[in-house]
Length: 420
Ligand SMILES: Cc1ncc(COP(=O)(O)O)c(C=O)c1O
Image 1 (cartoon, rainbow, N blue to C red):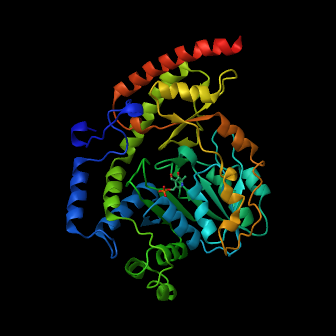
Image 2 (image 1 turned 90 degrees about the vertical axis):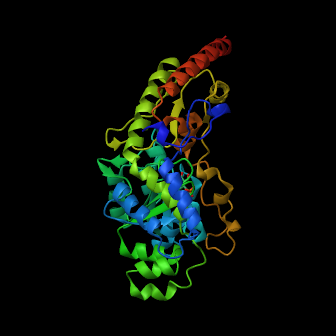
Image 3 (image 1 turned 30 degrees about the vertical axis):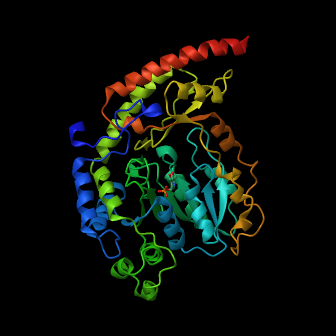
């Protein structure tokens, strides 16, 4: 990738590790955006050839064999998916508590009841043993998130789904290009979604996509989120035609400008994955000797790594707190943070009556004390913003090496003081 062909974005302050921060786009793409902008045809009300092109490339790159619906965000794609799955009004849905809120919250608007499940240690994905314990006669679906690009064991998920006749939705928002035992994530379940927003490995700034090979799910997602022209043109089941005109009160169409950006990233996804993984290996090679208490994520040989989106390490020092570490890393110039808490700590799951008139009732949806593995894991993790690792730039790793040396030299005397 020649930097002469790419646009630059600035970096300052805590961002000083990178020449360029992800997402960046080719000059050709910037020109294409400008051309589209000047065309004045931006609403994608009708079938837009750019969205068509993006959907075809999304399918061939991420989810061969299925069909794509380009949406305004990953959250939009999730809302479409929950409508499209056509579950009973009071159905229960098994979901990970260790995920981004939008994996779960859109279903609540539709009256579906999320059943938060604990996590497996280390990878942090949904714990299927805990999930099975929470199955009731009302359970109709399971949702998994391939968190931080670590694929969930999809063979085990599908076995559980078969045992209890559950629909399966995969949230692949962190896992563009990742595989479970050689097969792309998102191609195992009934439907899959990806966020294509913010700093994701395929980013349209703000966009998302729903994939499915199930005609009923596809049709219902169309009439729900893509009313009128798109739904009318692509619907398979003629009995749903009467609903294409009205829609259901939402407009979840993606923007063609975002589609142009997404096409850029899809065209060089494999190259981006290779660079990111190479940079992460170098990053680990300078971090581990300096800070051996900062443990790299465990690799599973059944994963093929795609994105790593953000990267998480565990802090296992018995003397110095994670707060001290994070503060010291940040003051040395590194972009790190503590992860957010599990969803079971969010007030929405304690006070569902806020969703007035919905059938979720007033009783708390979970016992926040029942997610011990997730809580323990999230207490140890340090999240790295890896936007500076998408470029062939050896300097960035050298700068990390310098910063780690500084941090180690600052932490050692503090450790000595605490141990006295
Ligand atoms: C796992 C996961 N699911 C869903 C979403 C929602 O995507 P969006 O921000 O595009 O609405 C995100 C966003 O970061 C996410 O991380």
